[in-house]
Length: 418
Image 1 (cartoon, rainbow, N blue to C red):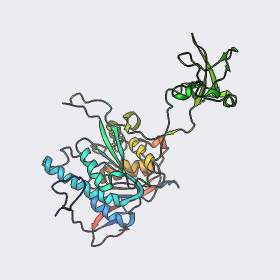
Image 2: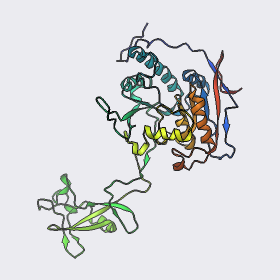
Image 3: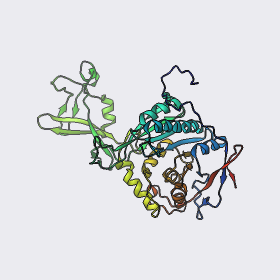
Image 4: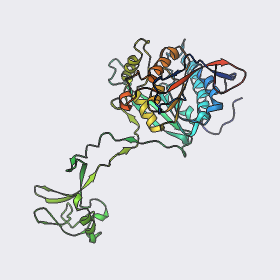
């Protein structure tokens, strides 16, 4: 019997059918665990790569990792019609929603109070996933939606719209405890178009007050006084209509900040005093909601990265570029934090987390775990992955990971060696 709800909710045919999963044990396959021979002391070690159904694996992780994960990143199936064999939109849609709901519920329990989850999705299920995630994480904990430009060129054969983006839904476990790192400013805004004798960037702002009631002499009589231009001319603050205006600074501040004052001269208007606004050193900015492929890579970028590190492996469908994960992990985590990806695929999340000094847990069900995820992580640990963000973070190898599989068990347990 469906429970009674007073709030609007998403309803589908299998919503109230929950899987009955028997507790499972994580058993280490030490032959597949890997440690760097020439290790770095700062490289992450407490990492897990798990092969098996991700719902069972997540439940098996709960006793040890509940409320400990700082960042969850998942790239689940998009349910585009290719995910399910014998595709029926209504049936597959309901199955997909149930699959996502069951996993999000456990991921919510694994997240730390100050943690966040980042979920990639496209137009097929994005809006349903948003409502579903609202139910699991709470609408108040919705941080926002990132639009990632996944394609670096349009599709000329598109029937209606050439789709060039995916979404990344971002939720916090508890918004009151969440905190994100700002992004470094690598390029100054274009209006910082001048340099002083020491090479510091700045732009000019008129010293005359403009706009509002404070720009008139009548309103600010103490800010109406003369300033001496480079040719000895006495200059007063005048408004566009010729009436008396006011300066932004007092006489005392003009004297104190004289090194920042720069005069310009225009034909017909004479001299005008301006003041320099310098760019801050180590400047940062809050993350924006549109991420371009020129900054974080595209699908083409990611396929090339996987091909470079795994040249003999079959092409992987839709991996994500390392720069995209680097930005997410920079925003959501600090070195040493624990990152979880339960749809590990080609292992990009683990590769980037490892190179950035984060601890990680990856879960992958299929053969991809042995053909893509495991060999990629071995190469990362051994310093044999020169692509992706390796050069940017000066990655040369180190650390290691333990490999686990799911075994039938009558009781839950922490990861143990076989």
